[in-house]
Image (cartoon, rainbow, N blue to C red; front, side, top):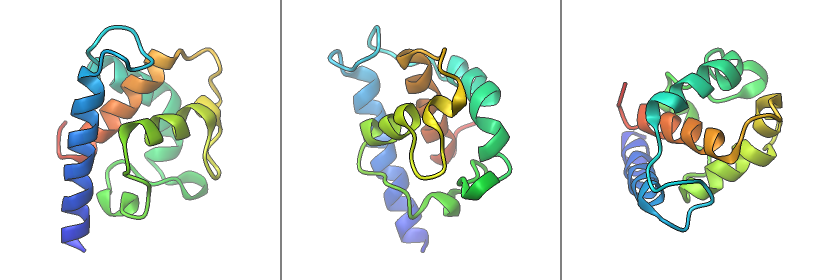
Length: 116
């Protein structure tokens, strides 16, 4: 089980680093702001992902994410933007921009990798 979590973290790290530096990414600039991502997470994602509401994987528990798709940053970003399973699109915050979503997903991936 620890091997799977480690593998998932490695894949997330590589995907998020590549996405953050990818000039062709559908967000402005070539860097993602993890601090802004944390703000977006707290205002739009935490109400479900901090408590596991409706089966949402809890951010503070990497084992909750092991069965989630870690294929690429863009998959996670797409799920956050368009919704996935019980998760509504953009966390029911339609005013969020693509950049906001990408930065929140980046923050989540950094936390899952052991960052603060």
